[in-house]
Length: 45
Length: 110
Image 1 (cartoon, chains in turn brown, orange):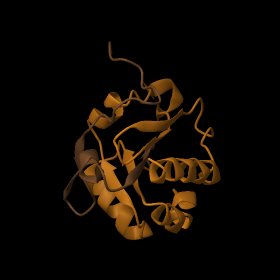
Image 2 (cartoon, each protein chain N blue to C red):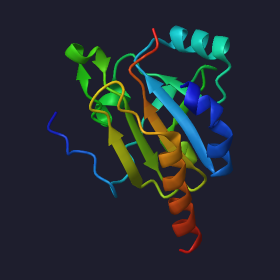
Image 3 (spheres, chains in turn orange, red):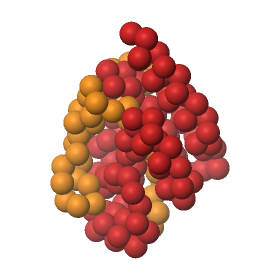
Image 4 (cartoon, rainbow over the protein chains, first blue to last red):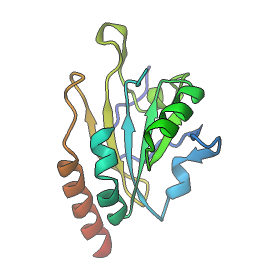
């Protein structure tokens, strides 16, 4: 709430979450190395 | 997810990591990834921290979260964002791959 809407050309908003191996993954891990295709799912359960 | 798994190689060839974020628990993610052999990164976001940062709509009347897809380039710039209007409103991988080709081409000319 109160946050600016995401726009094309905006800087990435970094976050860190645990992957399925229990390792932390941040979007910034890929800076300068890879493009990221980020998919938000509604959930599979 | 099935579409993405099938096309994962095409994303890899375009220097792109695929990261799926969902509201399920860490355990649910682990089980799902193990059972379905998904080749890309899966991140459990049960507290909606990442989803909120990206303003993914959390609407109980639409059965929880509405799907969203974004492309972030190597310089950390958001180059594509698609927020679904319904559960079925998901772009084809073909559209995403085309966009990645454009981004990679522009990047190599910098």
